[in-house]
Length: 438
Ligand code: 2IO
Image (cartoon, rainbow, N blue to C red; front, side, top):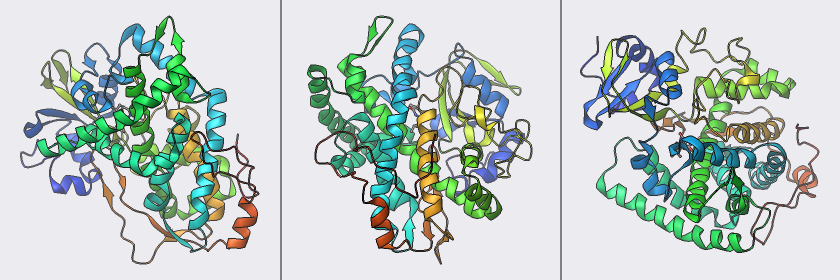
């Protein structure tokens, strides 16, 4: 029976949502939250149905949840021919040859950021590395000036807060909207300039790209840039932190990944299944829909609980266990439309950045693992997660065998990632300790 005292908005839930997943799936699989007039679905089959029945459940919620701060419509809001065409343009920008180039950018940024962090034998993987790394890589990939990363980060924090807030006060709403407008004002002249003089960067590609005669307006391009920024930045440091948390908590699996780096993609896929960094996906019910005997009315906002669905015993055996060897994971499919886990969503609007996300986390983890010898939590470190929508460790303080400065300088000497002009990081010479990737 549904417990009237239970609330997704309670501090108790926020402290450890996963402790409530089993109860929700069993006793309140269609949970209504009156304060925000929204429904929460926790069973795999219900979540899967909502994400794949595009007629009955639309992405119109994003008009209020995202469009105001994206400064235009995002990809996930679009439908029909427009969606197909624009999605193809974006997919093209994050796969194949483009992705190969992005991997070099990822590695160069990682090396540059790690340099000052390794000699001390201690770093906060989330705050010292993950957060600046995710913003700088994304700026590079877009062809924006990564020297602006601090400024862009603070604008993005407002956009992210708006998109992922479950409840937003009028005050915070105003602050977020102001930050989003500042970000827009920063981007407009760049986009106009790239329209006039297209370069080899992603923004230029978006300005000039066409598919089936459909092209992007400046407003479209701005919204897409902000969409890419938020979507690439918000979940990245969380995923990296969660991956290392799981590996440190499972030393035998960490040892296996060290011995055989080819297992990294399975470790990442299992991290995404077990602890998806994006925990909620909203949809709007077009018409009345019945789930497990409860009717969700037309016009209702429905939140798919990705974390709960990914741990449904009907979908995965022994679902609470982190096991990179689990037979029902299907690693090869995990970053594609055929993925079993729902961390990238599923259906027509499944994440377009899945291949990029995989390349990003895999490249960085493969670089980090050999460097972080005897990696462990720092003494006194207390692990904490935050967030209901995007969720991950608020910090991950790690100790490891210090990497000698001289060794590091010798190994990164040829890696010229410092650049004074806007644009991508210069392609790096692969340092000796870098993984063979590809
Ligand atoms: C940004 C929630 C960080 C997306 C969203 C308005 C659209 C879409 C997502 C993810 C992650 C963000 N939704 N990325 O859930 O682009």
